[in-house]
Image (cartoon, rainbow, N blue to C red; front, top):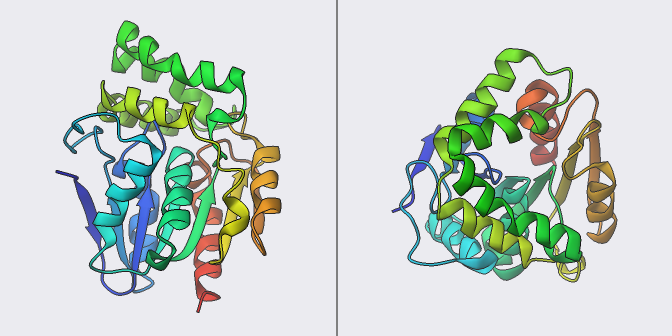
Length: 252
């Protein structure tokens, strides 16, 4: 069973969290988007938080199929993915374009399978989580997802959300999917409107990666948010939400 948080009513929006998050990672988006007269759907990915563990490794295509099932009865939908969620969103848009009205990729990537170094680093995360446990793993990794100027209360919120959300085998399956993925070849095939958003202080995926994604997608729009790290939707929610809402207004 996949747990989905739901807010509001109207045209649907699907929010896909990062590899260390859950639906709770979109606390700053729920009301803002619902107030626009939209139905906001945010999942806990398979193997995360309140969702059941998958039977085996889904792979990126499997996560995209699971996301497709969430929106199948209300498609087409606007899809917004943060980091790993953006990689799933990209695969969903490539595999099932008829389900996706528009795409927002925030702090995302083409996948960790692009280089041997990135692939090895992502693959090693499962063993690190098993060795440390969720709380210590989150305490070490969570602060890196924000800029050095992020307020302490936000750092605590990100760390607490990660500690509550991740576990094995779910996190390990997600890391394995990232390690085998390189979406470089599919970005040019995306035909729906695409907005790429990144924080100027993102040291996880980085501004250059978002620039590369935007350059590869036909007619994509790139926005760089000042004063934000990797989790741009949480560190600068006002600016992020305004960019996304303006983008959606222009989507037919």
